[in-house]
Image 1 (cartoon, one colour):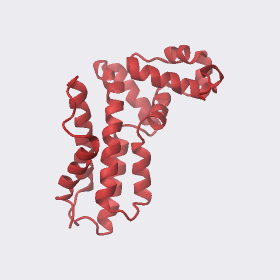
Image 2 (tube, helix red, strand yellow):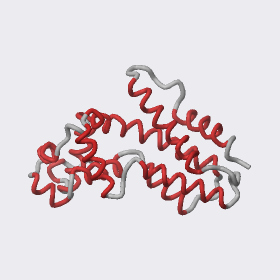
Image 3 (cartoon, rainbow, N blue to C red):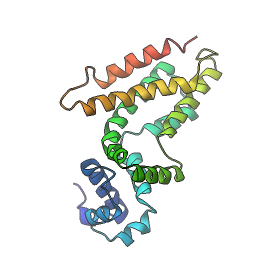
Length: 203
């Protein structure tokens, strides 16, 4: 049985409220004042738990969206024995779903340059940002190259950019094309994308 909102810890209610607002009105219009009101607490109480709106945003991405960064961190530390194709297909599936959910949240920022600049400065101070999954995937691919699973001349940074770029582009195209469904299910898209990419990476 779900815990009533009023009895949930304040820290969790803040994230619940932020997720709801980010998904319904977007990042640009979501303020700490609105989050506090939605969570049923004061702004002062909000700042006891989180230093900034950016920290709340990062927590929503980590806890409530498909877990792309944790998967990449896991692969960087231990790629396992299932092979590069399996691992990259998992990454692509997570990435598609992550970008599908995060793109509508952040899109409104790009209409407000000052707010966008302030937001990404705050996110970078927390060690986060759009570059983080890209760098983590490149590290994983570099490790696979070093252990001989990829060609010696494979470029991990370019390969990471191609894979994640394709996933984010799919999210952008079909978010912009309202009512137009993607031609492939996520799993099929991820499989075809990875197989195409690996033609230039495998020994």
